[in-house]
Amino acid sequence: MMLGPPGAGKGTQARQLRRKWDIPHISTGAMLREAVAAGTPLGRAVAGIMESGGLINDELITRVVTERLAQPDTKVGFLLDGFPRTIPQAESLDRIVSDRAPLIIIDIILTEAEVIRRLASRMVCSECGANAVGEGSRCIDCGGPLVPRADDREQVVLNRLKVYREQTEPLVEYYGKRPTYCRIDGARLPDDVTEEIITAVESQT
Ligand code: ADP
Ligand code: ZN
Image 1 (tube, rainbow, N blue to C red):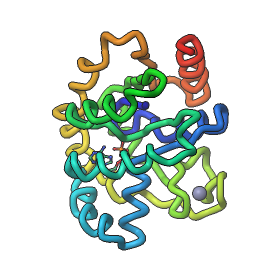
Image 2: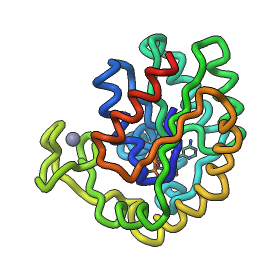
Image 3: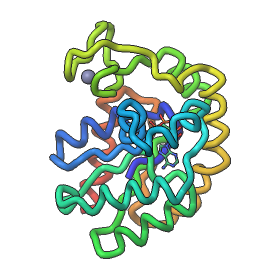
Image 4: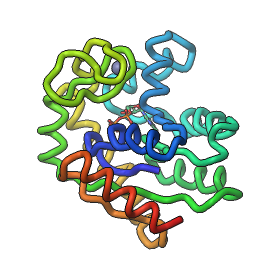
């Protein structure tokens, strides 16, 4: 699972690693954005909260993740991005995976100043949600048009950072002493970060 502040590169890295290891990338943010776009009951329930940068309630998101992790494609392993974000979510995840191989925690470290700088200029694909790479105006994965992400507006970013500090950062303490906890420097170039993660994870397995 990927830990770290918004903009640390969790989604970008998970997309690289999914190719490398051929395991599913499970992004709660992407799942929720799809539900909002499709106007499902879940999407309608969470749209306002996501827009403001708050967290949707633990019970609801835990149900979404539990269902996803029950799918057979996760048997070989999975990359979890965006969950857990609170201590109760982490406790639920420990229960969900208690009969599987140990959870490896990839904590991507980035300063708040760098988060704000990155998110202010981030563009994402409006079709597949990938983060834009390079200078082009189209997604390199699917050719879709690039747009700013709705919750990357400055006020919302500041709120997401506050939520991260208050609710998600305590997970560093929760996981920090496990032998499977890996700290990764997120300020390096994306390919270097990927290499560092691969080295850290492969030394675990
Ligand atoms: P970020 O780029 O900030 O890591 P994500 O794309 O992971 O954002 O998630 C976007 C939004 O979806 C969050 O700000 C939050 O409102 C909601 N969300 C995603 N995952 C969770 C979760 N595990 N618990 C509660 N809310 C979540
Ligand atoms: Zn795309």
